[in-house]
Structure formats: C-alpha cells, structure tokens
Amino acid sequence: MRYVDEYRAPEQVLQLIDRLKTRASLLDYTKEKPLRIMEVCGGHTHAIFKFGLDQLLPENIEFIHGPGCPVCVLPMGRIDSCIDIASRPGVIFCTFGDAMRVPGKNGSLLQAKARGADVRIVYSPMDALTLAMANPERKVVFFGLGFETTMPATAITLQQAKARNVTNFYFFCQHITLIPTLRSLLEAPDNGIDAFLAPGHVSMVIGTEAYGFIAEQYNRPLVVAGFEPLDLLQGVTMLVEQKIAALSAVENQYRRVVPDAGNRRAQQAIADVFSVEGDSEWRGLGLIAESGVHLTPAYRAFDAEAHFRPQPQQVCDDPRARCGDVLTGKCKPHHCPLFGNACNPQTAFGALMVSSEGACAAWYHYRNQECEA
Image (cartoon, rainbow, N blue to C red; front, side, top):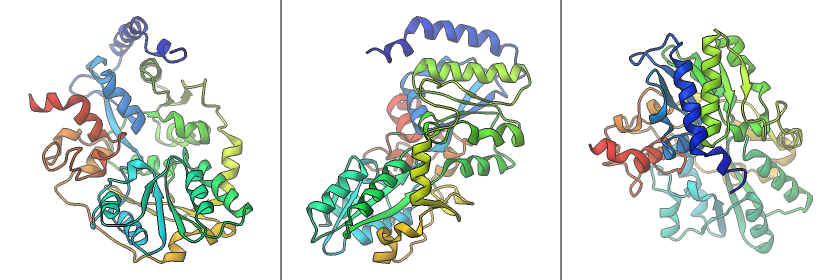
C-alpha cells in the first residue's frame, strides 16, 4: 500500500540498522548498561513487538515501555463507577471496545452487560450522541477516555450536543493528559530513562513545543516518531546522534503528520470544553498532579458524575501485579509473576493485558514463545 510499504521496506530497514549499529558503537553505553529509550505510546510498543525492532537494536540500546496507553492506566474504581451507572434503569452506556474488558473490583463492563445492563460499543463519541437523539426517552452515557488524541472528538461532540439542545446525553470523563505524566516519571529518582520516543498521535494535537521542558529541565533528548519500522528506527538513530553530540533537544521525525505547533483547531475545541486541573489517579502509578481533566462550566450539564452521583470507589491494585513497574519501564511484562498464568488475554488480571496497545498484551502475542523457552 502506497505511503505504508515504503516505511516497511526491508532493504531500507537493514540499511538503517547497519548505520545505527555503527553510530551506537560510539556511545558510552554498554550491553550491561544500555541506552534506555522509553517509547511512551502503546502504539509504538505494539509496532516494536510486531516488527521485532527490539531484537534488531544494537546490544547497547534498549527499549523500555511507558504509560502511553490510556486503557492501561484506567483505575479499577472508575470501572466500578461506570458499572454503577450502566446498571441503572433507563440508561444506555456507551464506550470504546478496549474499555469493555478492563477489570474493576466488581467485574468489567462486559460482565455488567451479561448481567443485563445496556452497555454498547461505539466507534466515536458522535455515535453515542446519535444514539441519544434517537432515544430521547433514555439517558445515554458516553464513557470517554484517552489522551489529547481523543479529546478533540469528545469536545466537538459535546459542542454539538449543546448546540442541538440534547438533554439526555451525558459524558463520564476519563480523559487524561500526557505532559504531567512525563514530568512525574522524570521526577522519580530511580526512573532510569535516558531518552524518549514521543507519541505521534498525541503530538499531532499538542505539537512538539510542549515537550521542551524535557530537554531543558531534565536534559533528556526526545524525538517525536511515527509508527512504522523506518519511523521508529530513524527516531532511535536521531536520539543516538544527540547522545553522541552530548545534546538534549526535541526533534520531530514525524513531520509528515505532526506540525511543531500542533493542531490549533483541536486545541481550541479542547480549551472550550475541558479544563485541565487537579490530580488524577492512574492505575499502577497513583495520583499524578495536574493530569486531571474536567468539563468547563458551560458543559457541566453533560457531566455524568454530577448527574448520577455514583459512589466514589477507591480500589487498590493487587500487590502481586507489577503493572506500575511495567508502565514506568522498571521491568518487562514477563517479569510479573502473574504474566501468562493468572493474567492472560482470555482472563486478564490487569489492564495492560486487556488493551491491544498494552505492553503485556503485545509481549504475550508476539513474544510469549520466548517466555516459555
């Protein structure tokens, strides 16, 4: 397929690998103490495993997996609140497919559906709004989650709901923001992160300028990269070149998609509908300051939590699971004692095994034979 195949061309991949190995030999990093590059985005993690890129790297470079999968950091208590709302009479509860199987203390939304709740999978928030307009006698709730990538679609949907005076449509907000998370990771004294591959999709909205503090305050190089093999390998090569030159800068490999200033119209829609304030709980990571997202006063009438008032749920993660360590790059998925046993794609214990972008799901799908060897 044009515009895809050229970014997967084996000959070019091998040429870039050869160049990367040559340049990596100039680094002060070794096999025992490699250059640790955190790929923040779950889409990057999936691509790395799918194409085996981690196995092609020089031995003194290592990928570590970050918290860039919004389903994976979904707290159990939030799922329980969703189940509470979905189980009420007259409610149609809508969300994306990835969120259906995320376990809470009281099961998953898929299990709530099996118990009789009207829970439906939608492909966009606009689908949920259309459902609300077609069923004025029902209360339709959309469970929206994701980073800045999905926030514009939710914002535009709520703008449409307000403009059309739809009064039976509600929004349960689990949007979170990426930048405070990266700051939180870097503030941890044992973070072990030497460089970042930043997500292309989030950056398409927020631009590259938002990452400036990572280079300026924390002296870590960062490259925004696309999702194909050549994108990722070129991104790694750019990071290696920065390390050789003893530089820390923000660079943009994904210029065919990501403008440095981001998408201004998307940013305006987000600013109109959402305010970013307060702490937010992240599964496996705890509270992260200033990462919470709330509706602005003009859109509070659509706030599902204010309308339905579900009992707040504080649910602790099972101490046996190492989700937080995987999300912060401190261990690989197969180092968790539950991996592949109590936690597998059929009976997921943690959200990292549920989402198609989760590091554990990607490792299980593409690398499980290594764990069994």
